Image 1 (tube, rainbow, N blue to C red):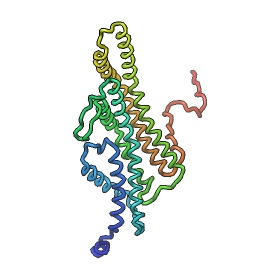
Image 2: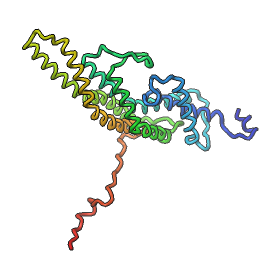
Image 3: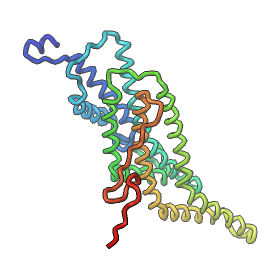
Length: 301
């Protein structure tokens, strides 16, 4: 094929271009299977494959080296390159997807406390059942994340990962891998922290309602506390959920930034760095006295 193209005046290494483009595509495909705001479960798989291939074609001209290196003929080497790219895509996408699973866990915890764990909805697109409140908060997190522009920050960092983690190079076994494992463990634990923090108002209110109903049952045993508790806890949980929506919106914005920072840290650790990346230095505003300039002079007339 290369000889035929050379004869007609086209100097392109077809075999290298195909391998390099497919490696870019594998990282995008693995990332797309993890993040729900771009290719969620309801999206057909052929759309995921096609859209990721289009993104790979757009990224190819900016990433392909001017002088293509000679690829070895070892098939095992190429297989390991594809596995490495899939691992990179899964790792970066996993760091961001935890945000949305955390808010879905908040809704599931609220429904369990409200006594609605049995009342689950069927989602035909996913082929599974889900929590009513969990799906509401999951979709709310998706909408607010896209509204805040978190996807633009994520994609900027993701495509920069092709520069930080070259396609044709393998990661080195260094202390950064231990830091990466620690980051994944902390992100997984963050799901439970987010769930407990955001569901705490509803859990506390329902606990107080259970105590009041228990006292009422002792005072007036003829009251049907079991049936009354379902109504009170159901309405109370929904009321406090909508009252706390403003707080949940602020937390979604905060955790959106944290998720994008986690994706950047993932790339940093996969480069082999053991220490976390240095925080950006915030310059003081112009016109304000600087600490290094000493005490400002007092002007008197």
